[in-house]
Each structure stands twice: as structure tokens, then as C-alpha cells.
Image (cartoon, rainbow, N blue to C red):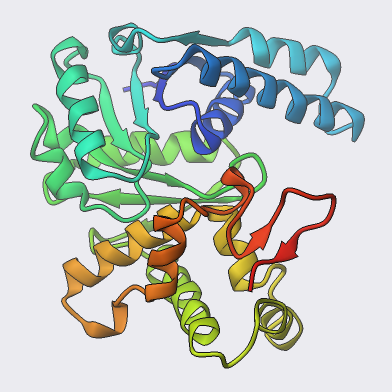
Length: 291
């Protein structure tokens, strides 16, 4: 099937980024969230990022305006159900995703492809709770979506070839690159990345180095653009912990045990940049390490 319209559930950091690139590629976008404030903030973020592209002469003002015109927001979930492709981009909690799919499925067109932007949860298991496991797959964008070129495409056990090919074509239309991943916990990128971040947490927890020394060591010693603790704050410590729990539960290997310090930060509500405190304190003009 030819995909012309895209529905996105969740207007947070990932959802608004996906809406941005989809609309810029010419798709009609319906962006949903349970909060009007979140929707307004998402549109403001998209506008700001498009303005930045205009100022850098990557797009014209006319392209910015036409992109914004292709995005409609709604708090009514069934309004996005008549699109050709639905991407769930809600929080990384399986029970939340299940509730969204339960509400969406009765409203969907028979031919609509249903996908999840999950970064770690089993696609086969999510698909089994819908009426269309053959038209369900993982559609995992990287953050920040407008900048990052990779999209992981994950087939569940029942995903058919037509669904995969349709999603692959969308990725190509976005001028991004698809990596095909098998349906194992955390797929490819986070299977490698998040345990590295967890090990950095252990390095801090055990007193091997402080926040500054750990991040500096990886930036200068491994040529990483961001240190692992800085990156954890950018991703969100709650998301990092959720992925580690999926790995630990799904693979039953102690090497994936979440670091107690990571758990403690999440319990404190220190989730990184989005709460202005994590491994760094962002409440001042310059981020300051918290340990």
C-alpha cells in the first residue's frame, strides 16, 4: 500500500521529532497526546527547529510553512486511526503501550499499518495484543529524530513482507537509513549502547572515577561525541533503566543487572535533562556534575 498519511501517538521528544520529519517529507501528519499543553509545546519545538533550518539555509521559509501546515494535533485518539501508518511513540512502559493499542485497534482501517517506536520491548508480544500482527512492526527512530540518520526496523514473528517493504519505503523517503533488526530485547543500538551507559554508572558507583573523569575519558579516549553519563541524561535515566530491565528480564543474564545508582537516581526523580537533574544539574547556566 502507498502511505500518504501518518498518525503519531505521543507528542514528546520522540513524537514531535517524528512528526517533524514526516511532515517535511510530504506526509499528512496527525499528532496525538493526552495533554493540549504537550501538543502546543510539540508544535512550538517543531517550529523552532524548522526556523533553525531556515536560518542555516537548509530549507526555505516556504518549505517551513508547508511542513507546519501538514501537521494537525488532536487529543482524540480515534482521529488518528484513519491514517495509513500509525506510530506509537509513548513512554517506554509496556502497560501504557497496551492501553493505547487497545483503544486504537477498533478504530483502525483494515489496511492501516500499526507500529511502535519502542526502543527495547518485544514487537511480537506487542503485536499479539492487536488484531493485525501481520501489519505490526517496530519503527525505532534515534534521538534527535531530525538529525539522526538511522531507523531500526524490527519485524515480529508474524510481520509480513508487504508491511516491512512499506515501512522501508517510508524510511527511504525520509532520506534516512534503515537497519533491519531481529526481535530480541533492545534490538541492535540499545543492546550495545545502554549496557555501556550502565557500566559507566557502575564505574561511578564503585568510585573508579567521578562524572567528569568518566565522560572525559570516553570522549577523548574513545572519540565519543558525548560522554556516557551526559548521554544518559540526554536519553532520560528512566528510559535507560527501563531498557536495562528489559534486557535483564528478557536475556536472564546478570551482566545486564541495572546499576543500583541508576535505580536510585530514577527513584529520586533525577531523570536527566527533562527534569533538570540527573548525573548533571542543569538548573544553572552551565551543567554541574551531581557526583
